[in-house]
Amino acid sequence: MITERVHAIWRRELGRDDVAVDDDFFALGGQSVIMARIQRSLIVELGVEVPVDQLFRNPTVASISAYIESSRAATG
Image (cartoon, rainbow, N blue to C red; front, side, top):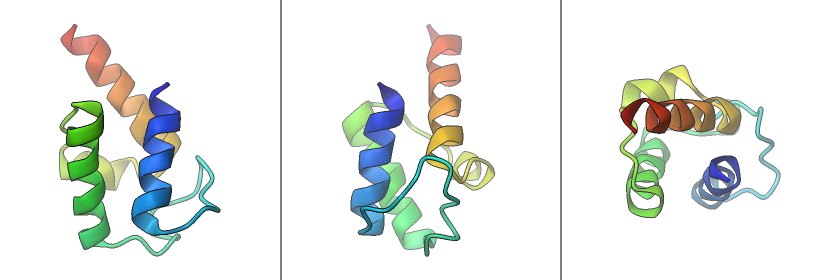
């Protein structure tokens, strides 16, 4: 499932095991360097390119996972 994989990426890149799917990236201490690493991991591990503006608009595991799932559905 996308959410589980995204969740694992966030936990790894934020260096935290206590990340909930509804926690805000920025409230967890996230910043641009970590966001860039997450963006790269999404490409490498999930094969999906998420524009940085979507990462800002969807700052939770749940919301970015929903964006990824809807993008995949729209593209086929």
